[in-house]
Length: 470
Image 1 (tube, rainbow, N blue to C red):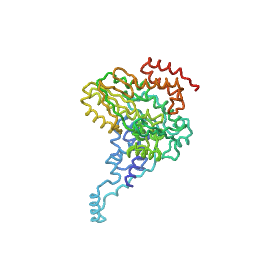
Image 2 (cartoon, rainbow, N blue to C red):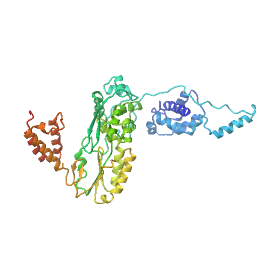
Image 3 (cartoon, rainbow, N blue to C red):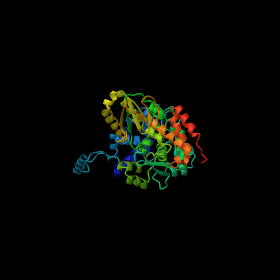
Image 4 (cartoon, rainbow, N blue to C red):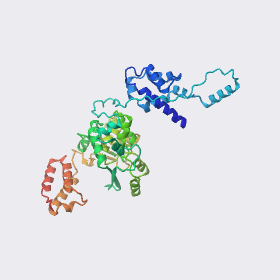
């Protein structure tokens, strides 16, 4: 284990030297690579040329994608790198020892083997933004090469950034926890960042993440798309099939979030800090409380105990959409194979299409479950629905049989609540003791207004009759 670790350190030292001037003209020619590697090693061993020749023929685009870790792994995988450490198997080494023992001193005229390499000099390059993949070049993103740049961009002192985004799990708790009852039973955990961290996350969301496009099938938390556009994609279809992803935000781990920042071109250190700012490890006592309630299994507890996207952080929905890009890509392709349409709103996956989709439901279900599992998520076992035309087809609470509309039951309940508020005062209807019941009612009316201006007018006439002074 120690030798493997030592070899990795040598590979990383060489990788740093090789990357130092790789972006300059002629910086990846064999001669230039050999010169930098020899300067780092303090010698030019015989195996060096064989190690570097395959790298010298790589394209500039390939070199742009390398970082220290990926290039070091490539060096370690090279047979030539093994020669630097005398990479013979044990049997050959034993035969060699026996042969050496049988020879006299006069017969041993072979040259002394080279010593294992050492990094004598670290050759570093300043951290820079990496080029983004095709399709993201046009994104206007802040240029943040170092953690000092990140602190300046976030308008934080460097020590404050280290406090909010520690390299190791910190004792300081930057989140507040709230357990809310679900309609289907159990508790829902909300992890809300405290004031300073929330300000930082909102800055990251509005200035950086909002500039990155998500997949066209994603309709949640995206400008220009909404529950209404999500539902409208499935209006008038013979069959609507709904799936639900279990623990959507908690399933997105720090490694996936870090990969997003790296894909956007941010250097390794900056990507780690951004990941720490946007992920969270749930306090152990909260995890135990959820387990005692019975709504959290062992896998769910393990996810919450490791760094994940907290439900309640401003950045979590946008990052979850980006991390689910490949999921959306694969499910959209699957829908095309089945002759169906596909959209996603957060954890709500919806397919719709012709009557033949009903006969293919079992096959579609199996494919969706496998793709979702392969992308690191899990389908909720109790929330899959296949809805033919003769039933009420609901998508995220919206009826889509003929046109997008709020169910009549929801309208009637809100109308009754407003009517009772007029007769007996709003306090009589504020059963959950909401601090701003007036805004709550306006929000419910606004929800219905998306789908029916007539219903909105009827509800507003009642709302305006409420005596809020009581």
